[in-house]
Length: 240
Image (cartoon, rainbow, N blue to C red; front, side):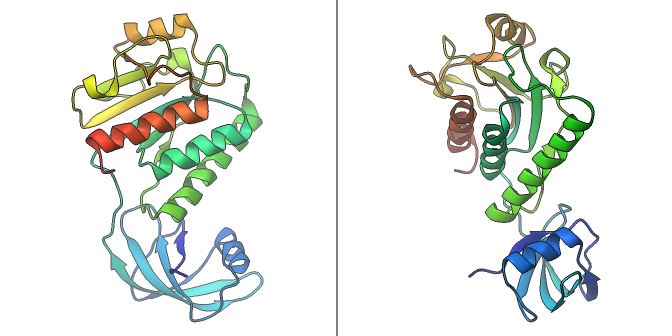
């Protein structure tokens, strides 16, 4: 088994010992690790830190932080996914796989056809959950920088929140093909929820400078469409 790659929301400094937070302790216990286990820790500030687990008790764990490795797994193509909020597991799946595919940011949006509507405490709780999904995906795929998970917004309030050289809206009815797009160092990709975006929303996106993009002749589910586009964009202009 490779050394576990774990997120720690704490300053990390070679040559120091560190008490790990509860959520990391629980993770270590699930993995059934013991003293002497080598770890790769990251805090989202760049690179990762080699460490050794010194002690693991029921409610405490201590590690020795040994050295910093300037390893990164970031794509040269900066992509922000503007994702229509979908039902529980679908949204989790989309966030998880988008992180694995190298997005730099995720902007959840509520659209006309969004089945899920959140506000107040439910919105705050779901946002924390989504961040946890993104962190777990970084741990799994080896990324040391956590994509920015922006606060959910109504689509109408999000047009100017995401800046990019090229902004795309997925449209199953018509649009340019991926190979017809100009190269760009930064992209924004708008994907609708279950049921897709309405015609009015697509028209509004185009009016705000988005380019209509069609992914072939088949209609894809929300959790398929965005990920297919991300993978293709990374293959054409990124690091796949």
